[in-house]
Length: 132
Image 1 (cartoon, rainbow, N blue to C red):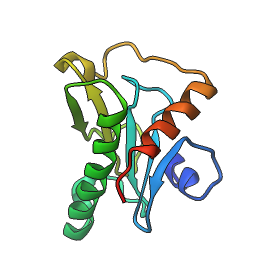
Image 2 (cartoon, rainbow, N blue to C red):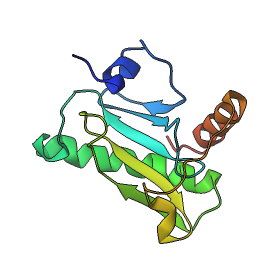
Image 3 (cartoon, rainbow, N blue to C red):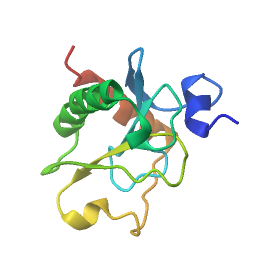
């Protein structure tokens, strides 16, 4: 059965897409820890990140770097935290989270919510800061 991320990639479920290429997609987490919390997902469905090929692992970090730089220009933060947990959806994904303090990346903390309009505006702001 396809994961929720595969359904997003296939256009079956909408998302707040920041960017994509032939291998990966980046979209805002709809249940974010912080404003700008973005997921980086390979288009090929592999559950555990370390079961991906070396080439995919290399490419995902390069793709994530481009997105992280755009988030950093869009959201006030000290840096972009990166984490891979991968238990909630059995499809490799990286969380990019703007942080000021280490506690800002805690998954045990309270999630924040935004309106659809706020998500759309944030998506457009990050997209405008992407380098080609």
